[in-house]
Image (cartoon, rainbow, N blue to C red; front, side, top):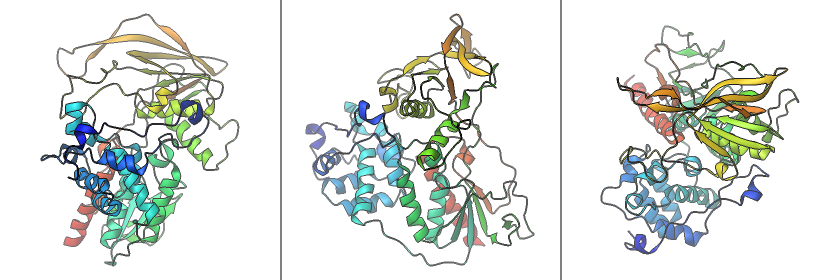
Length: 460
């Protein structure tokens, strides 16, 4: 611990966002960076606690005190090596993780100002690529082959780990590029896709094979007597298969008027916009755009926030976001004390760009003329305790009203996939196993699954 009193004298300092009037005109990353001196000073605030709750709270078990101390001392390469031991993709989590570690930080619980772990992590990762600390490894091959189905964070983590263990890994991806929701769900203003491409390049140089625009046998019914899988009609087989297909089915809202033109699932907008930025072209009829429109986002989570930011950059007229659940408390929630995740009001960079936010709103009907959406009938509701326990009971509170809207984006989460019974050499990880969760949890699941695959194949 280089400076044991830094937490007493150095206040938390975040890099912050680019000015609103600047950032809403492009899809460049909104978050700025601190200079080297300020970043090392922020790392000095880590108290190297005797019981590091940050380490405990992180799904990856990141050793924040160790790499924060190395960062404070200016030992950037050491900091990266410590970070790399637990996190294969710090350049992803350093940008988009909600930082479970910071909500567990002792400084957060005592002063409300946690160590800037997430930003420190991103800075370490970027310095590592800049200075050449990210090197290409050439693992010794063991002669066994593993197929990974899906290239989201869980699939990439599993593929990366298994490759470094010596397996010959092939990743099958149904889309035209790797990343899953990292590429097609998260907007570029939060995660520039060149960051993904850079990591994929490293993995390819280390021996991972990616096959794009290819569907693995999704029914997984082509099993021979040796319990090996065959991809389509090819004769290539694999000693194990890792399914990391995420949660492909979004939760829909089947109410009157759902068929109207202008009602879309959130990912229809987000994935198309990311593809447009990548150079793909869409016809006028195919293009989903908020330009000049009154936009209503249904769902109060991160995906809804991403829709808000995207709508602004497309030139929307207005944005309203509604959520069926009550408004969370600001700052502290006595109902979710430590060690629970604090359910408090979250205001994102997209919200700061302009948005009307409403809670306890139930959606009743989509309204339209000549097949096109013109508005949405909603009603204010309330929640009362369920005498039998479980989910509270929704009760009507206000009168139905109409919110004017030309475009509705449904951002209400995703359905947990159901899987058939698989042979023992098939492993499921990430959101495909748990349902929709965080990128950091998907990476952790991919690493854990890689260990299980290795244990299984080692016994064989």
